[in-house]
Image 1 (cartoon, rainbow, N blue to C red):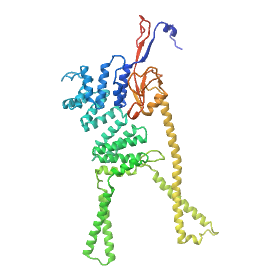
Image 2 (cartoon, rainbow, N blue to C red):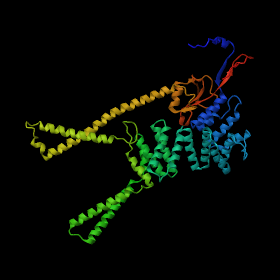
Image 3 (cartoon, rainbow, N blue to C red):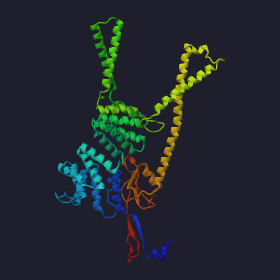
Image 4 (spheres, rainbow, N blue to C red):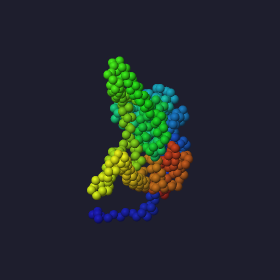
Length: 525
């Protein structure tokens, strides 16, 4: 209990009768701009353009809507349509020493995208002037789109990679651009460790933006195709090789890898040619020098051939594969140990092969001991029967021992498979339970947009269907409300490839107090 004296607060009924009735409702204009920025954060550029395509009720922020629409048109490669929107609002290029606002930046991007080199130099120079992470991300996205439109691929690659780093990889398209850019920018003559970090990191970027293994596989295939088109066949090969070691087997991906991999026959032909040459040299040398006997001649030929073949094999091993640098060759050979493990449902290197060898040895030893015990017990003096020591029985002995080793391997595989499947099923169930639990928690203060399975769960398990109609002209969209905060969310399969998205909107306060009575009298928040 508090020691403070009691005070007489008005009852709820008294407060209501006094006319203090401020409520919140959907703000169509504010929500349109909020949904626009949320769509950009989700890398849904086409959706962002559809959201601000038409005005909603009211003229407030109409200039901001047209600027956003112009920005969206630049981002989707239609700068010529964006410029009239800005010029109609009186937006003009900035003065050399004057301040610059965002509509002028968007106007500059329309000029730069349509071939104005001066505007392009001015736009890229603005990147160094922006300190705010939010505005730097927004400007970098515009620079990346303009660079794509101009065909300036190196700048576009670097800019899209920066967008992914600044804002987080939020869509398959952005993930593919970031992965492509990072692989293209790797140091091909650098250390093998740096190369594998880049390639595995690119795969992780693609994996993180995909909803499942099939989507990851498609993203890898498209990125590898883009690398081939850009002339980086080595990068495409390394990415495909990493993906085949991290994903379940797929015929299409294995075919693509087989078609793009360095021709192993070349290295084999080099070795065979070297062996043939070594043999010819050895024969010629021995024949010219002479030999004491045919047996000596044969021995010298074989010895010389083996030595030269070993040397040539070592030289071949130390040479780079066709199309690869030497560090990339070492990475390629090191990736041979990567295998997808269907039991653990994960890829990478596995230490099971050593345990399989141990199981095989134990199975073989157990079989030998068992057979020996049976044979010793077959006679009263413990000696083996005579038939068990003949040559034919020894063949049977070896066959049974080998079968015991194979049985040990099979038993270990079966036990590991049963344990692994239970562990994977339990982990997936726990992950699904955590996702379901998170879907019921209000996310209004943590994010402005969400997408994929998380967005669908959040919409279905936390948000409620709202009464007002959707104020923007976006087909298949549905307006939902957060029961905790009251904020509106635009939801539905609205993204790339019908990706489900949830975009946060805005509210506005409405005064329902009686006329002539200030509802907020003496109240400040």
